Length: 226
Image 1 (cartoon, one colour):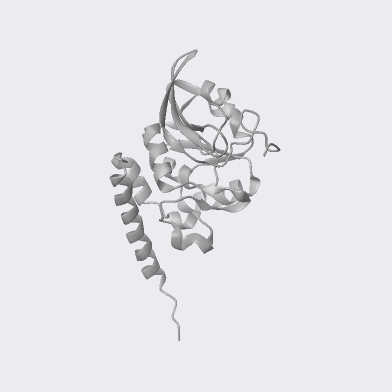
Image 2 (cartoon, helix red, strand yellow):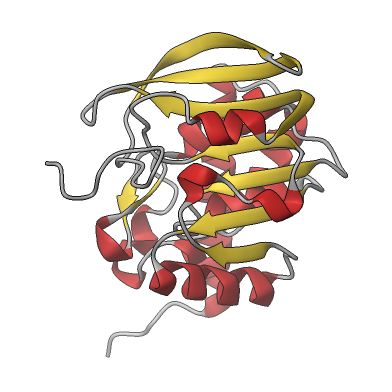
């Protein structure tokens, strides 16, 4: 007779896989101990579809609902590290997706507002984040124009690829605030770290190649175009 593994044993397996992932992320250059500790405390297996739970700790992007993806763990770690999140920061996330990136930000102590254009994804992410005790404000809307009710933000993180740096997001940063955003063609982008240095000045720094689903919206890609 086949026996199903016990929940405790399954949890232990995931914990080991999570620790191995954290070791791999450190070896790839993620050195922010707070980011690594946050990711080590979050059950990523709950943020992927049930059929994908066995792959939750692979360092790769995985499909979720609405033809979207949960980002590769290395990418989540890198973007969070670039944002330099610290407790009490006000952070806007564009693209809630599964809710995993929002959980990482909240675990670090950020006050997070997350915008998602797909109502189903937003609803599922909100339910899971609530279940895990993360007080993330989830909203449905066009993330490319930001969320003015909460501005200015200390940090903005965009989890989809934009054709250019969305100006509305850059303008919703506080002076000294940081926007982390993938920019480039639909099939390949470059990760940028954009710092607002003054009322009308910003500094953009490249952080390497990346690949995301397209950022759809008024200041992103047209959904009907390719």
